[in-house]
Amino acid sequence: MELSNSLEPTNVKGFSLIELMITLLIAAIIIAMGLPQLRDMSNTIRFANIQQNLISNLLYARSEAVKNGSNTLVCGSSDGVTCSAIPSNWSQGWIIFTDENNNGLYDGDTVDTPRRIQTIDSIASITWSNVTPVVFEGDGTVNNTSSGTFLICDGQATSSISRGVTINLSGRVRSTDAVTCP
Image: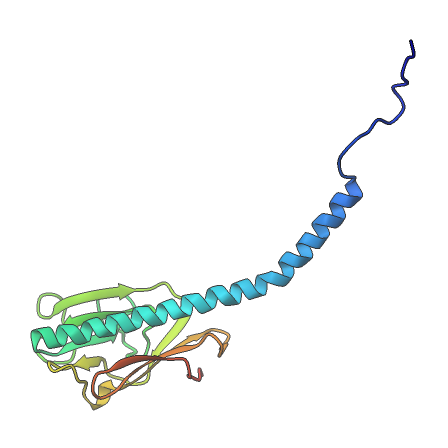
């Protein structure tokens, strides 16, 4: 009977420490190369979502104006309770309301009828090209001061993910990607 020497290497399977480190290094390089594209794709999706959210809210306001036959206003709001002191800033949300006393201001739910309050936590800067709220009249049109463009821009002014929303005098709301951010 032959005794085997236990000090001799047997058929061991596995990875050496060097092979494992090289594999991890290659994986880290591949991940580092892909992260910027993943971030850009994520921001593109988020900006498109903000654009579609704004469009759907503006279309809702227009339909409420036609349904009720009275002016429905949309104004930027930083707190969800009052219209913003800076009418062109819509970055934190907006308020949609029926202007019962036709003064062009949101007087709270005791005077005006709130229709929708939208607050957003956004990476985008949303600016309105006019200094007055958007006013949809009872026939769905807007007045001269309510036609214009919303710019949805990012902090780095990356034009590839910038979006826009335009409203023309007939009250038509449409998206546009051909915008120039400041």
